[in-house]
Every structure is written in structure tokens, then in C-alpha cells.
Image (cartoon, rainbow, N blue to C red; front, side):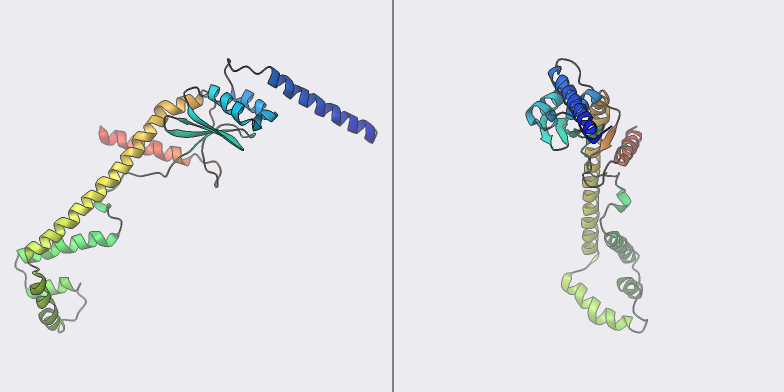
Length: 251
């Protein structure tokens, strides 16, 4: 076959392909279900760049969705508070805009910084020494974390600690109030972490109970939407585990 014949054949194939696209557009009906394969066939035509019409077609895929928006490689919409991306490229499936996984907080370690728990432990020990009327020496050892040598302690206690305690009225009530403040702060921190966790669990219960069945009517390929890192399904696995833990705790 000559170069001319090859060029003619190439043009014939291009024309056939374009005619097939035209026939597909002419046969477009929005009153029938839009399957995943059919949607991607449409996206192989210039229709992919028709923002209004492509969003309208996507609205027939998920009639319950709102806030349709065209993107260069996807159409996004909102289903029960979840942002869903329907790829218009040759990538199949749908993508779900996720958030960071939040794990159930541990009440014993709910503080952000380890030294806050150490301060609580120290206050509890020091109040216990006051209650048993421990010697100044034992209290001095705890106050300086057993740092000073034995012969230094009397001078440190006499000339630094006693004046400071007198000046600031550091009696048992003072230490008890400090302990109460820190325990209240720790409880508040834990409560805030627990509320954030419960919000995540409640939100994703809606996803698995209501949104996922809707998505599965269109495709079984559900991915986490990550523009930088590509596809990932680990988030869904982890959040399922947290929901299961929450159900066990509730029971």
C-alpha cells in the first residue's frame, strides 16, 4: 500500500470515528439510565467539554445529588454532604472527597503533650506527701526531681522553696486547686476529642448506609479523592473499623 493510500485509509477511519460520535450524540436520551460505559462513551465526544450539558447528564446519573460542577477531568456533585467526583477521562469509577481519619481518643492519654500528664502525676504525689505529713526532705526530693545532692537540699529548701511557698501561699489547697484545674482541662480535652471522633463516625455512617448504595448503582469502583497521591482505599477501610469499634462500645 502506498503512502497516499495509507493516508486515505487513515482519514476514512477518522471520519468513521467522528460519524460514530455524531450518531452517539444524536441518539442521546436523558430519559433512560446513564450507565458508566455509556457516560464514558459520551465523554469521548466533544460533549466532554460542554459544561452545562455534561452536568445535566451527570444529574441523571445521580438524581438525588445537588451542586453539580464541571472540572477539566470530572464532574462533581454533593450527595448527603459528600462531594463526589465522576471522572470524565478514561478513568472509570467515582471518587469521594474524604477527610482525615480520627481515631477514638484514649482518656488516659488525651493530652497533646506528655509533660501535662507528668505534671498531674507530680501534683498527686506531692499532695500525698502533704497528707501523710512527710518530711521536708522527701518533699524536697520530689520538688527537685531528685536532682540535687543531699547536702545541697537544706540550703535550696530553706532559701528558695520556703520563701516561695510563703509568698505564693502554696499550701495543700493551692496544690489541690492546681490539680483540679489540670484534671478538668484534661477531661475537657478528652471530651472535645471524643466529640470530633463521634462527628466523624456519624458522618461516615451516613456514607456507608445511604451514599455508597447509590454510588454502587453506577459503579463498584469507589476511590478516595486525592489530587496529589492518586487513588487510595485505605481511608474507607480504617473508617469502617472505627465505626465497628463505636458500635461495639455503644452495645
